[in-house]
Image (cartoon, rainbow, N blue to C red; front, side, top):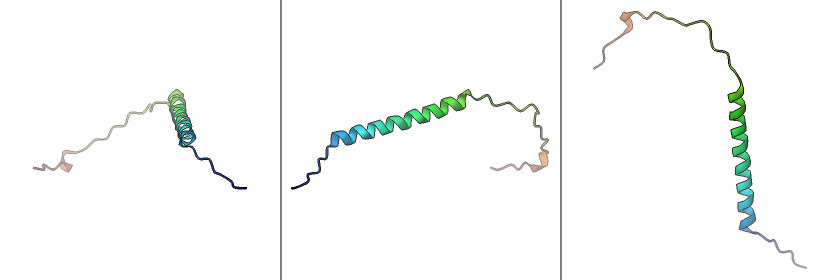
Length: 59
């Protein structure tokens, strides 16, 4: 008795499309959930004084 391996490119393409669709859905889900999180804005304003001595003119 001989065993014959049936390979079909159609089923391979369908599996690839399903896997790609699942990956895209997961990525969009993660982005959607991160968008729903309300991150607090910093309340303290950062101010740094830079002296003019540090600047050099480059031509």
